[in-house]
Amino acid sequence: MNNKVLNTICAHGLICKGDRVIVALSGGADSVSLLDLLLSLKDELCIEIMAAHVNHNLRGEESDADEAFVRKLCRERGVELFVKSVDVLKLSIQRKEGFETVGRDVRYEFFKELSVQMGAKVATAHTASDALETALMNIARGTSLSGLCSIPYKRDNFIRPLLDVTRAEVEDYVRAKGLPFVQDSTNFQADVCNRNRIRHKAVPALKEVNNGAEENFIRLRDDLSGVADFMTQQAEALLSKAQRGFGFDTEVLRCSHPALLSFALKLLIKKSGYGAEHKHIELIKTCLGTGGAVNIGKGCAVVVKQGLLRVTPLVKEERGEFPFSADMSFSYMGKSYFIYELDEKEIVHRKLSSKVISCDKIKTDAKLRSRKAGDRFYPQNRGISKDLRKLQNELKVPSELRDTFLLLESEGEILWAEEIGVSEKGRYTGFKGIYIEIREDKDYA
Image (cartoon, rainbow, N blue to C red; front, side):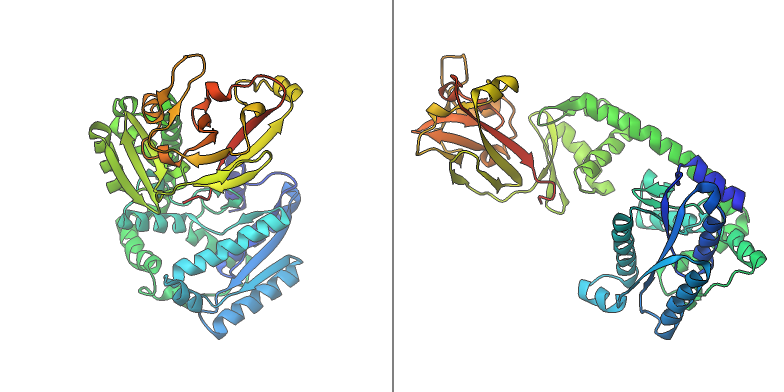
């Protein structure tokens, strides 16, 4: 098993020379074998090994005994150990979530904190058997290609060196080496949780059909992962081709293969910090031809309008007005605004003359505010004024966002408009100028 695990580590770049690795150590056969394997490879890989244990306090004295066992094991093997104790049942009641979900969240929050604190990777003891169970659960719940790929070899700072070995191989390993480990009594209760139902009922049924079901899944998972990587590349290319200012060209999207379109939409929504179910994706695909919006939950909608598709937060109508001053900053509607006063030398050096507002045009009554009915804007070099609403429409500024963009007004004239720029009335004429920088707040909505 050592060679198989080492091959997995090398093939997927899980560990590099000089890495610090924290083993997520429950005390069970899987995690004990992982700790033993990594310790045996420690000198060859030139790595530092630590361990972390979470006591969920779900099984009374048995949970405490597991913690004591892990402490003793690490002490004997000379491994630094980090322990966290949490009343998961109490926490699940407070959060109104299942104890499985809460327990997992608690573990990963702890491991992430340690990873940052220690500058280390976290190795979990997931096996091919765990991956098969996860894939079956994903199928039952409803999933896509990524769900069929199941547990990844690595994600962020988490690595899974045992993903190419089965639970049976782990059991043979600990038995052959005489390694002590603890048993979680709930693992043998078929109806205690969904994973146990899959483990004790579905997987044995599959193995009755073919005893090599787990090994076959490993090969299938590798094929599916390759397909997922290819689809991701193609989806990225499609989105890049369709990118247009405020959104994505609906015609370019519609002309793509339906499978690629679905994959690209899921990828786009995921990159925007949200998630979408199959029903959402199908509704969005329909909207590409008809227009409309699909609420995908968590304060977000996918809007198809003016030939563009956009993923946008659902914002409450809000009218903003802020007295203007140089070198100020503030937040509004999910964005941060920074106002800088620059001298002529810096403006010329940074080539910002077309993007700054002349200071001599800004009077004491100046303010940043939302759009109002009747606002007019003088585009530079056109010698005319335009109704701002109509100008935004010409520029395909999304209608649902127009009232969230700010304007700089002074003595009744609009000197600058967000997403349009500096007007003829605010044109830079030399000396000092005002530059307005806008940054999206990633946690907004």
